[in-house]
Image (cartoon, rainbow, N blue to C red; front, side, top):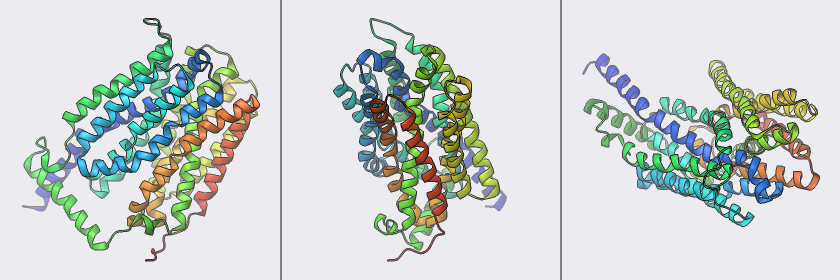
Length: 430
């Protein structure tokens, strides 16, 4: 077989796999993130109806991540051993059903329980998708495939905010609009969970939608990569954790997640209380920061790739975001000025992430990074609990969101400093 013919098969296989899998997996992540953060929009009506304090709501919103973190790594391992098609389908159907149940809570205990179960149900989804992508994409294509998911976070909020505004106006069968928000947004997860079972293919050698020559090429390509990795040796989690930078990376992601989820969960409520505007107007305005975040992610990632630099492209957004939060806190009751500063903050707190996930390989080396990324992601996601809970707790104690925002901007500054403290890779001791 000529080199040109082989190259044609390679290009065709890579394109066909990307078109078949990436849009569908991206859509699944959009649904997942919508169901994770729809509680932020429900809070505009839910807390008043159920007489929840800010502390109660913050704890309930954040407790999602306790269940998520506890079962995230086991969930990813099941994808590897049992197969993605069945396990991801199971995850989606389960979290869709539980999301519907959130629409029927009446007490704080019920709220805590279903949010914990929702996190447990979704655990393993994101790392499971990452594992699944390694079954289909070689190392040169894997980074681009993973990066496509990062844009799903702000885009989910950009789409979900006005959608939530429309659903919150519903009052069907005696149920409030916030209840319908959970019910209607839980149903797509159930539907697409069923579709996933029939649509996804676990391994290339099972892919009848690939021509035989393309199926053989991708199978050989991935097998060759596995053999090269085996020849170079592997690192255990215990070995990777001896590295100072693994601890720093975990702290950075935890502090960054504090900002992401603290902002995502509480921003609609902060804006409504500061402005006094109607809920429908608030849900439209909330979409603005997420549009800026989407643009910032793409621009920062593009410039980072072009400059082949990661640390400063991760650290600078964290510092700029903290500065924007200082200005937002001091902007008083000027709605549009405050919204502008919060938009800058949102852009920065999301834009640092793609560059951050390039740092483990740079600072640890490729194989140490592979051993530690799951650990960093699992513990770092505890920031999703810390951020919403601390903001709600401080708001209840002080009657103001300002102390929580100050704490959040301090987290951003500290995370940026830690990024710059990362050092170059040195061999692991054995």
